[in-house]
Image (cartoon, rainbow, N blue to C red; front, top):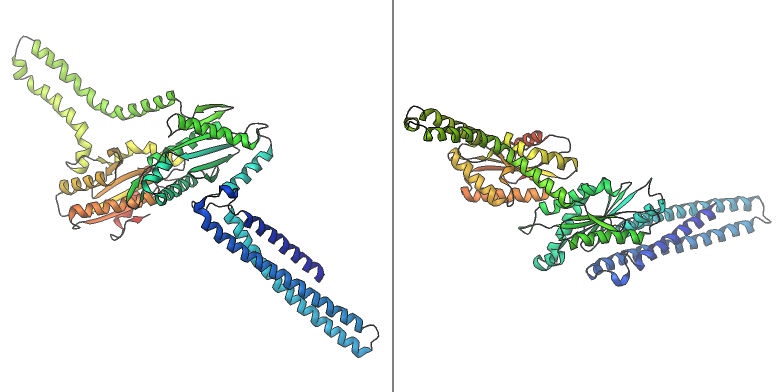
Amino acid sequence: MGTELVALIALSCGCSGLLCGWFLRNPSGLPQSAAPSSDAEKNRNERDRLEKIAASLRSVTTSVAAEVDAHQTKIQAVSDSLSDSDEDHVLDAVASLIAANAMMQQQLGDAQNQIRSQAAAIESAEEMALTDALTGLNNRRALDRQMTQRHELGDTVAHPTTFMLIDVDHFKNFNDLHGHLTGDEVLKHVGRLLTTSLSDVGFVARYGGEEFAVLFNDMKVAEIKDRADAVRETFGEQEFFVDDQCLQVTASAGLAQLEPGETIESWIERADNALYNAKDEGRNQAYWMDGDVAFPVKSEDEEEAADTLAAAASDQPEESIVEPPEEPIVEPAAESIVGPAEESIVGPAEDPSEESIVEPAVEPTAGPAEETAGGVDVADLTKLSEKVASGFIKLQAERIPFCMLSIRVESDKSDDAWKQITLDCLHTSVRGIDADRIGFDGDRTFIVCLPSTDESVAGERAKTIRQSIDGASGSAWNVEVTTTRATGTETFEEAIQRAIASSQTADRDEPAIV
């Protein structure tokens, strides 16, 4: 039994050594001639670590083999002594046998513990071999394994699989302009966004360079293309900060569903062709393949319809404000001017016409803003909800992050003065934010909505806002700035109330994230 255990341990050592050799031969998972020079140092360090593991395993194997030989020698000696022995010699032989077995058991236990330790180290090395060092995503080797497993299922009807390639637009120019370290931060940012938005439905990986990939298991291209494109669009909407630089990037994408009898190489090539069409048509868009024909995920008609709906939604409140006053302005005025008596212009008829012109026009347009923020032109929270809540619900359904900044200010200046100064600081600090995404609670707190923005970016903006307000006030005001990320279950109004509550208990020394 002991010999069988030793043989099993030795076999484990041998297999582990072979596994180490496989990693040592090519730890990156890429052909050696194609391994990026920037990863050379990481590869050398990993090879050194694996060489130490292999050496340790060889030492354990050699030690166990020597101990087994010694044990067998002792057993043979005991066996020889029992051939023609009296009772005393038999008892001595049995004692020697028991001692030898106890020692062997201890040695085998020690060897087994060492094997377990080395096996854990090899498992860690294997995990590292399947992970991209920069972004923390699955790497190309891990993706290839997944694609092979899906391809081997064979039944593309019961198990449809869609493959998407994503490429950061003009990344080489971005690197040349901002430097490779900043480019690395861009890739990390893209990786985080893909993981946050798509890891629940897809296998997210870094494909190589500035290209990423997502494998959507059990999903047809028609089922996932719109959601995938919505995530891609958020790249251009999000801003992120690197060394006090506010940066934005866009991305192009191509999708292809595995077809019956298709090879993996053909499948990847079709997704790449879709990506090429997206780039060729101006980038910052997505295409999908229907067989060998590429189609835009968003057709021109769909884009025009979306623009029309957006314009109609934004124009609708203005129409309800403008149209009612126009009727009393035009028609009575025409009658009074053309009519027989000029008294109707300056006489008694003048008062009703002035009232009908002035009062309805003023109340709907200026009322809500003035009631909320005095003479400062900013929406109250009800108006803010009307403008932003529908987009909030859409992003929430697609698991795309939505953050809010809450800025609470206590100042000795008049209401209109500190509110206007704060609002000016918001506009200058948070570039690219539409005025429709800023609201005021009627007391001391401004809310800034940041759709498609994660906590790290929102936190940087919070710091910038704090610095801007402190600079404008000479640090004389008490300013509380907090960052709140909406959950997947709360309403827009609940998220706002949580953001306001967070600013009332925040520490002034550092913008808080809740």
